[in-house]
Image (cartoon, rainbow, N blue to C red):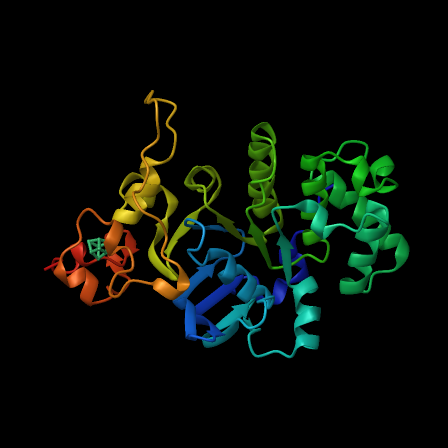
Length: 337
Ligand code: SF4
């Protein structure tokens, strides 16, 4: 039996974007001044679409996901822009209002499934309570939905598994339970932050295939946050490449992969292992992501960029359409000198 498609739950606004982030900025006040972690980031996710958000550690991709969920850790705070989930503005809600929206309209999947599960309660109890809290379903109905959800995420013998505790599941099966929990209330949006990073390689492809299938069958929109361009290539519809708190390239996955415009994206693409080209080592991008308190002026990628010119360290390139994608690089905007 399939889980009820969310188009049925949200029939009134099925055409509205699952997520619309516009001009989002996040800052962290510190003793040495205010540090901007996210700078004017915009992204949209349609119902049933997977948007990959990719970049190295420190690019700002996880902070973007946490900001959408309203889970920024203090002293981090929003300082500009707006966030709409299913057409509803969420960045101006009170904590109490946001708590309701978080379970009902937004689900979250993080790297370690154990942090999302309570070791003291059976998987069935956790699923049923989550379903009832956010949907108001009667107990019998919630039990039936919990069973459907475990079936939908590919857990064998779901009746028996509902009576078991998290420690009785393997890592991959636990992550499937977390995905079921994230889907429990029929959300419009799921933020999946490195959902496969802690899993065995053989399990990773199964989990990304599951996310793809659930996206197609339930209509949920997914923000897939990862450092791995290979995962994006296999799973996402569109991609946002982030570098040092900004989006540097975005567009349909196939276009970005086959014809990347930004030198940073080109570097990420070279780091993907290819089945066809037998190479001993993967290409690396020289240097590392700048720290928040040492962000270079102009294009933050300029100290690592093989094409950098004098303009690159002086002025920040805007994100503009380039063919079928958008890129923030002076190379496509009149030159780097
Ligand atoms: Fe490289 Fe300049 Fe483009 Fe930045 S703006 S990616 S430094 S060429």
